[in-house]
Length: 254
Image (cartoon, rainbow, N blue to C red; front, side, top):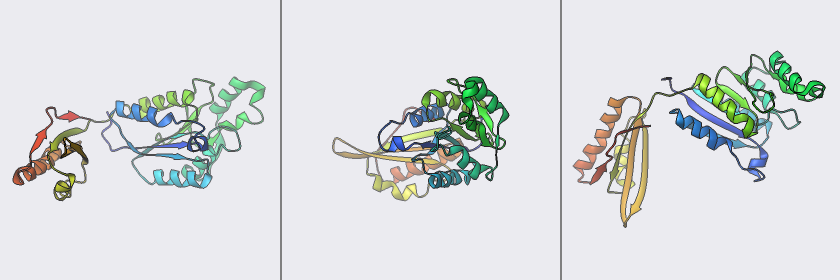
């Protein structure tokens, strides 16, 4: 079980997703797999095949020392497959090499047809490790055990996602979560929200039921005492201001 803070990012590359020619299947799959293991997305980007935009996004994610990235698309051998080169530009100071094992897999799969183009899919950032492709043996790759690059085809990428998560990010320490529903508007609770620890996840979901304003307040964190102490601030505030509320019957873990 991993207890360190980890921020998961997904980068989904494909102009065809943005112009509506295809529907994205990567985010829902990755998000489901993260949640199964107790993780959450920090952010997800769907971007066109633009080298400057890709470089900027990769650098943004790299700047987060707790980041883990799953990138989908652009690792093929066509002229618009930029991911391998931009990954090298962002993560290995432009340094690339023909990966011997990747070359072997591609040659084994395609024989003479590996040349002149398919073999270039083995030209990877230096020190890359491989992700198994269960469809055609052309591997994905990863760097520093936290930046993972997979094909744009879900049939290939999904098994790579599971391989990476099972190997390096199997399960997160569970967050402790408490929830209440206050019979008031969200605006009534803003002052007390400002006093909640920044270490905690604060969720405020307003709703109107039977013409009555209600707001669901949820606090979550890894330190049970810190969560309970901050939750008590809400309880005291509601009691002091004679605002009715309902506590969740079950104190849950994420």
